[in-house]
Image 1 (tube, rainbow, N blue to C red):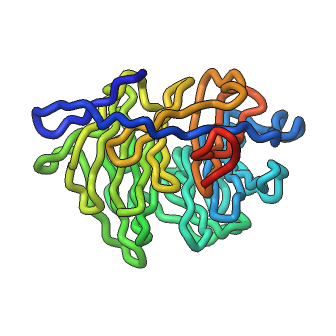
Image 2 (cartoon, rainbow, N blue to C red; image 1 turned 180 degrees about the horizontal axis):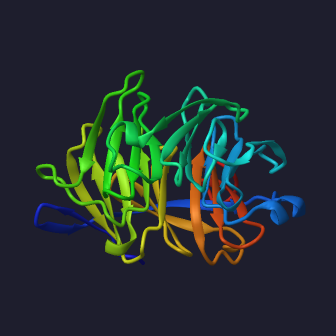
Length: 297
């Protein structure tokens, strides 16, 4: 069993261990052969409250929308720097109103779409600070605050809703921590932020105001993470860890892991787990259950 430790100040202690379990049932739906041929280096996946799946098709500079059966139903236009054109999108998130936000990495901006991937607006990071250039990962708080993990400065930019104000998490601020090497950011139902640092084999937790709370240490490199249905999910290359607060939840695979070798990103919502891998068919879907005998959520 993997050891998990939580660091607060100089104290390190083991996370609570219980006999709680979650079972994953594989879904028969896989990406179509046509979509498999079209996708190039997909880097992020997200799922809305209707069960639609969104992929950052990074190598093709676009977003792709799929229904729950993985049929393609919408796509953005491709490479460029204006409106819905993008250059190496690196992450996606969505709000309760089903707006889609994309980190347009090489263009140094955040692009907002409606649920059908129609362009709404964009915000350039350089308009807040000329040193902020590369948005690597994004997350939304329950109140609509947008958090941007920016690669160049190793910090998180917090954009207030309906305003042009911003603030900074991490970096050289008092009690802050450099987030260089940060890979993914996620927000829970209370607005707390979780940032994965694969190089440190850890996840950092901040409150919504940017105050550092704790470090969760793992013996895997956490490449990505997501919060859904009250649980924090953390993924290494070929392993998933699930936490409820500080309690480790045992993850049991029904059938098998379907030879998942390298996880790129995950999305969790409404009792479903979607895994994006670097190998075809790219998308794996699992139903999450609290019972080994069937779907119970």
